[in-house]
Image (cartoon, rainbow, N blue to C red; front, top):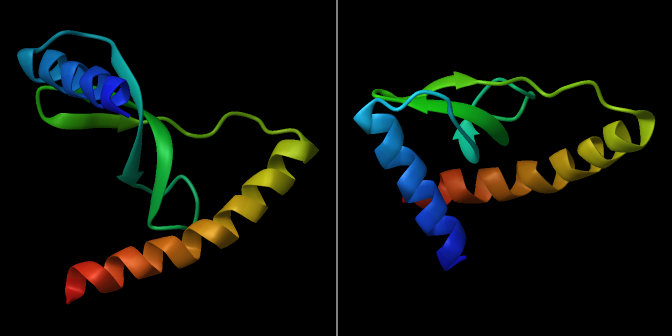
Length: 86
């Protein structure tokens, strides 16, 4: 986890500095799926997340896995939103 945190912090700082082409996978508010948050590839820049990339083509196995994951994520997201609102 510490390594991932350092890589992400470094990418954020490079983006804020104005370096081009900083792409990371992050958990963000997005419209990639019908869920309000999803882990996606994003391009970072001076203003933070500048672009959220869509999911690429998925095969049947990947689509089934995504549907299963979305059910689990929906509950976790709702739990997180409820916690923040307290």
